[in-house]
Image (cartoon, rainbow, N blue to C red; front, side, top):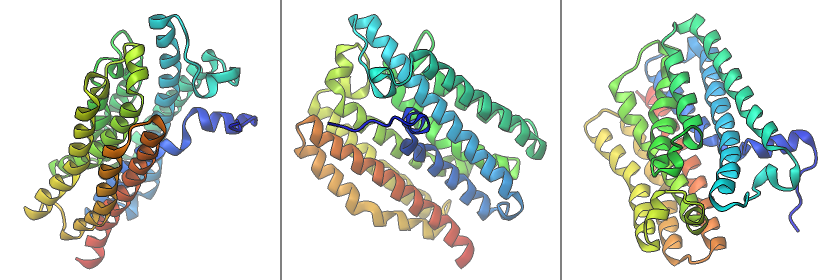
Length: 304
């Protein structure tokens, strides 16, 4: 039997899905690395740390709202609340989870206001967009994750919004190159979400949740994942070839063997358990790719 945490701190760490926060940590690190290229990081270390914390708080709040609305939405569509995560066995109540999300968003907003004392009010736009996309992912009258738009919301929020927001928090402006360089990390986050949806395809269909995976056959869903996993490398190769990214960014291609392993595993997986293992590998790829990308940018400063 699975051992569930009983300590209140552990329960809240599970509620915010703490390991998943790498999805905001990695693009924040990437934004910091782009700032290093522009020689801003050394003098703006505290704004970088604050920006990183802000986007992690936004994701934590989003995770709480996701759990709350997934729980409530399943009850509205099927008459039965699928008890998931911390809502299972009443470790936290839906009200606690909902207000926990509000607290995370308020904390992120307050820190965002504080950060404007360094870089002006422009940073608040990134906080606002992050909060809106996070809440509307499963909340509001038109939840994006239930209307086939969740994957695109993840691409935008976990790519350009976090990378550009962290970069802006240090240098006070944005560059088109940073936007283009952020897309690949957003696609990688998108691939992770799609893998999760591929695993939960049948359950999502039962509650009327529209995702790319639930709209597709199993074969098509796997084809989509294969393409999503390869797009970041194609984009990075193009940007590095035309010298919009430094040559050291090619280091990300060291993670390609893991991509090939994931593709092979997903095409041979047929059960929920096997797809769960594929999801774990995809999360690992997202982490390693992001670290390699960041190190590649930092190396260009040391070697250039």
